[in-house]
Image 1 (cartoon, rainbow, N blue to C red):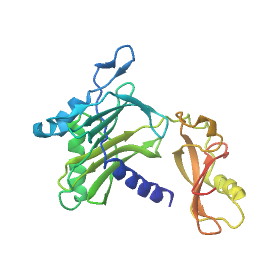
Image 2 (image 1 turned 30 degrees about the horizontal axis):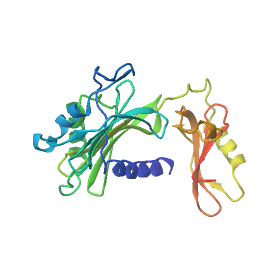
Image 3 (image 1 turned 135 degrees about the vertical axis):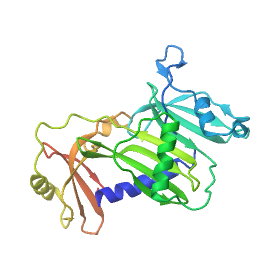
Image 4 (image 1 turned 45 degrees about the vertical axis):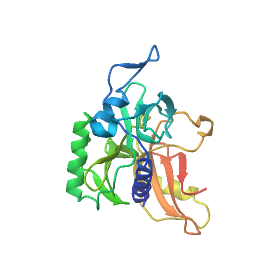
Length: 272
């Protein structure tokens, strides 16, 4: 249940994000701001790889801005707009130039979704064309709203990092709609990982009256929510956790997150 709900919410989020511009690409060594310590590939270089010469005519690059992602990572955002001021392409990179996001607007649906094999092949083609690192393992392929999402989930020490990985969104002809790369900072894993049975007992002791556990504990790298209220807007390290799924008395699903070593509460997902 935990992985299913995460994959579904991820699909919706990526499709929503790629309805406007966004992306990720290999860095250049040309500084964007004198003395700012920022270097990245200019958005005009990326646009030349994605758009036809006719589509490039009249586009204007806005001054770059420094933004912070939901995970707290600082990023440089570049935007290209058309003659009407409408955003055409958005690119986000880390301060050292690592590409994080590319999003193009106005990409036609071009018929139905791609087959799984065709989607993977086209996604790999775009990654190679943009000079990006090839992700490991086999991707998951999903379709929604006429788009095909090819997602490689990041794993560290054999444990998934929900929300991290490489995601490519395509239209029906395989044209790139958007691409994102997420690599959260991780805390050091505990020296000793508690057994799943111990995690199940610890989770049961924390449940409110009437709540039931309906899944075995699974390890994942999670963002803690307990005790991090004062750190809002800053980059919080993900921690290795036992995730235990269940439902409250009224049927509301939840996932309880416990530190993989100490079994201390790290947070609730879907429950107050």
